[in-house]
Length: 161
Image (cartoon, rainbow, N blue to C red):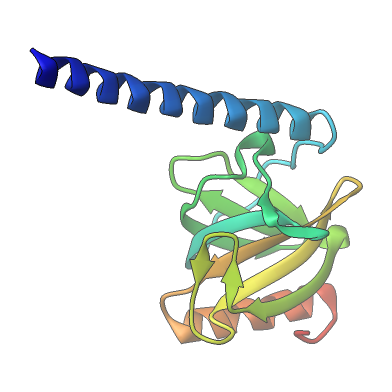
């Protein structure tokens, strides 16, 4: 009987912790959505296969942007057109990084929950409304990454920084 009670208490503890995490995440998302505007929908079909890693606040790179569904990682295809960079995510809402809002295209070795080899991530510094954010992508093929970065450099008229 004692084992059953201890087992029930442990399962209950896990359930309570999961509920607290869910409420905390929901509260953070709600707070961010009251300050951060929703991104525009994607405007083109993706041609560059990548992995969407994260979007974080530029002022606090250890704080993930939960607002408007930007928190979840996953596969993405990136399209580039005159409007900007379309991020078409698998299973999540797709969004547009407008050309006029892109500030810097660079490389990174780590983000909030992902560390890779030196400069293994492509980082796009941009403005989501008045909020400066950084979106990170990981490319499986170096030639796809190079092609993407060259096209973005041509789009914004600047070199990779």
